[in-house]
Length: 359
Image (tube, rainbow, N blue to C red):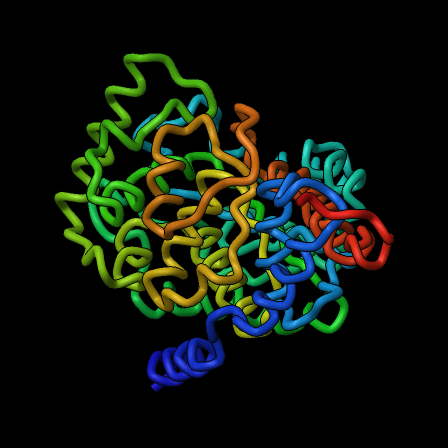
């Protein structure tokens, strides 16, 4: 009964996800066509302005109140030696973020974005900070199971993880205009690579990178682990919950839910790098219209990232050779949203400025 109720809640959220509003897209494009500059001279920023108008149903898209949601989770597959760092670094980095000493803190601060850390499935219980401002516990379990030998989680746990993300979006929405996705979980490029291979149809070799900086020998081993995980679990590439159940992480499920929740609320969600995009792919499999609310921040160094973006028919705003995660790329991209909105609202048209147009 509990599982049926959870799935019902997820389905009800998906029923509230609609494409962008074409009338606002048309109005935004009409204004941008008449701005005092050569036609579409600000390129992708103008495309982004059209998207923001369509997402928010507004010619003055609200983007000032920004929230970076950093999902944390541990992974049983780290036992296979797929990461360059020990599993306890997940806990240590959560504390670093809470102490405002991480990359995400620096970039979010400059972007005027608040940071919320969510424990989706870390090994640690975080007793010392579980009630601290900027920390939220939605723990499903203390880490996933080892995907090399079986499913990462049960189907019920997968649905719970996605629903937890939806609940976070709903709870924060009253004070948030734009969501940004982030994550912290040692070993999480391994399930993300597995998800990328299954959903995009690319080979494991094509989508798997060095993550935290493993060497070539370790990369070969990582590829073998991922191949066995896919062979053992046989996920259904068209079923987001099945893919999450068999391969995912709790933070990946939480990110998927956050994106679904944001889309249902007609709020933009800026998706960070490789792991965040694995979460976006899960959300996209569950409800394809969710892509209308996703803004891809950047193209990661991880080779599978662009394939995942292509699967959703989305293009990244930047290519800066980023590979940190945590939400850093999404935090940086928040500046682009401010810029795109300013172009739409602050630049005069030829008629407003009394400037002669091109003959």
